Length: 393
Image (cartoon, rainbow, N blue to C red):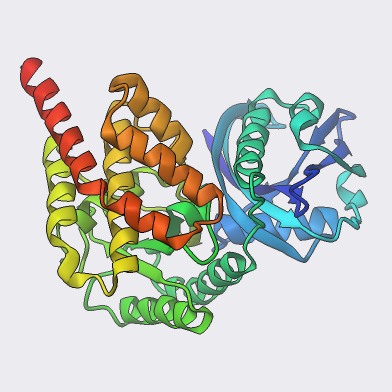
């Protein structure tokens, strides 16, 4: 069976008050008419993010867009033009455009580019499977509308810079790759509050290539005043620098989410499995980290950020243990926790934390108040999971 890999992007306007999205009308060679978004096949050695941005530029004429997040990987089967069965994957990204002046690529049958209301875009799209990604884009925009929270130019610059510089290095190792995870991938990145988390694979700890990519991430973060973290996973999904069990857990989780909410931005997708995670032991590790990690945290603000991050990791660990493909956006995680344990300390805390982030992570003292509840909230979930585990055995 033939296999094809493509990437594309849903383009939205930067104006969050009246968000619109760009759809393209196309007449295919066989005469079929369809309404789609910009997408196309990956070129040799090209990562999905680079392919998506290239396709947007080529098919719409939009060169100045902001990377805003990752919407996931679509997969489907079809019959090729010669009758051969084939499968295709499409990695969908979210990008934002300030200038809406378009120039469609008529050589590929595109006849018009239309900016339409984002909420009604799914009704215009030709393919039902694609509508799901339009809904995901609309959810990200809706989350950012409250304050509103503009799409981050800093996030765009850092992710693109790391991706471009790392691509040249990783090309020297055919099994190596780099992905972006966390809020920088989910679309809920908050400028001035969120970190940019990266994960790498396919390189050994002692490799000069590893050191070079780590330097790239560190230098780009320092240049832009943003905390950029990069951890490489070994063939078992553990941190190659032995950063500790909490980091191993996060890496193993991120590896499982490649193509779900972790996109490949340089190199190739991981080929080795991440290893198994014991839910109860994983939660205990996170609780221990929350209790004893203070010596590594640089300030009270940093302590608050770390504790709240650990609380989020705890909740997401519970959620994906029951549904590995579930959404890890914070409102969805809170909903899942509430469904399982109504009124739990962790679900209440994270609902308030989500509201804090939607408001732009201000005022800062709110984070400290929320963080003071994090250790107890994590401890309660560990007890609840432990009780359920023992009662079912």
